[in-house]
Length: 155
Length: 55
Image (cartoon, rainbow over all chains, first blue to last red; front, side, top):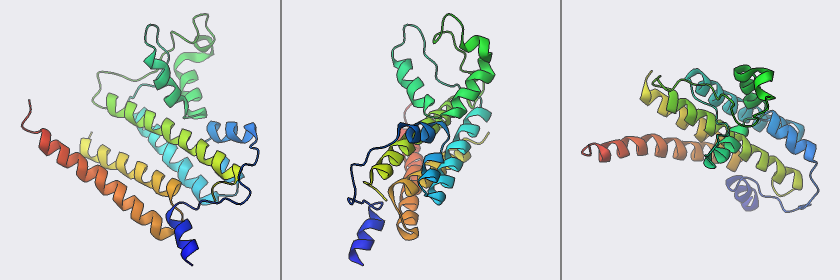
């Protein structure tokens, strides 16, 4: 009973079978579609919650006219922001294609010159960016969680 | 657009996320959710009050 309580409190750490190999496809799937990695591992409730939370944050950010992070010339930090925002997986990619079109994505200046959308004049611009970045970073944490579960280090 | 409502919505999403990421079991998740949610909302209000005298 005490062991069960300990597991519940600490997020269910499991050491049995730890260190298993993890398929890169599982990780890619978990990144591309929020929650799908947990679904494939049989964690249906967590899968639904993570999908709902990440999508809700992304949609809120978009509705608030937030700007997706894209690489900018002479701004090395923009790569960090892009990495965080890219965590949104397919949501980020679809939004980027919607904003730039396929021609814009595959232009000769790629990855520079992309348009991240958003409207800096609106009151919700920075709030929107916060929601978009938060969604991306949350999904990256979800991917790490899938990795831990697949390795058998967590239940 | 209600700024406070956005704050509450953001805190809610993040609190739900970490409750499910870091805890298993309904009771443990509920406790962590409440901790996160209240700290973020009340902390933001408190920070707002502290910053109030500054220009």
